[in-house]
Length: 343
Image (cartoon, rainbow, N blue to C red):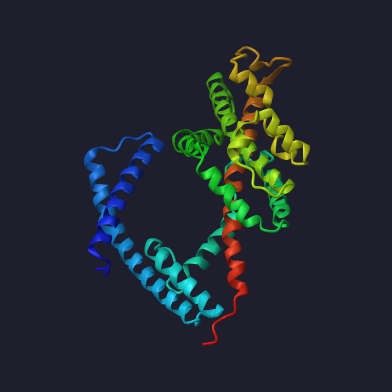
């Protein structure tokens, strides 16, 4: 048992119960799968027994470390080397009880640094990606973050962008769509369909229509990053999101990042949005009617366009990973600048 006061234990229990209810509700809404009352109560009890105990112990240990740090500060005994040691001790105390994958002889933060490096090098393995511009999109994303890395104090601004997007309604709807539809959509796109029938084309058009809505989130986020390159203030994601899709696309293209718009066909998007398209079973083609443009794609070309847009949309998680990892790895730079302990 931890040495927390009874009042503190009650607060932890109340917090855990409230968080458990909110988390379960969120899981139900995100996955679209209902969790019954018996299952809900079982999950809550398990979290209180397992997670609750770990939280109590972590709070108690972190509190003791905090008291010790306060004492050293008052006595002016806290050196830069001991600051580094105390940082590792504090983060190990808080994180290790909840992350069983961390090796015993590895600090929690060092483990997180390693995970970030691996995430930055990760790639989606969908089989059709080699026939898209996925690699080109990634190269341009890397170039964008290299440019951002040249600006002073960019880490804190990127972290603000990350939190801004994370707290937006778009982030919630994106996770919900991913769990309920997008995973299955990408599985369908990966199928090797030799003879494309109308039922397949209908599915491709359904997928394209869905991906268009999420592409608007991606291009707004890229526009925010572009604004960071141009000015000192951190632009708000919601402000960029309120601009028209066309405005964000032209803004990104106008500053040399047109690669992030190449895989998106605005004419197809408009035709799908207004239901102004026609599937010809005899010719195996689809006619699209936009306001000022009419064009025809074969069934195979519809498949290709949908796969291309899906490859472009895969850049969105790469953007979020890059933002997160830049911020986290900046902590390592600070730690590396501190002297090692003399002991």
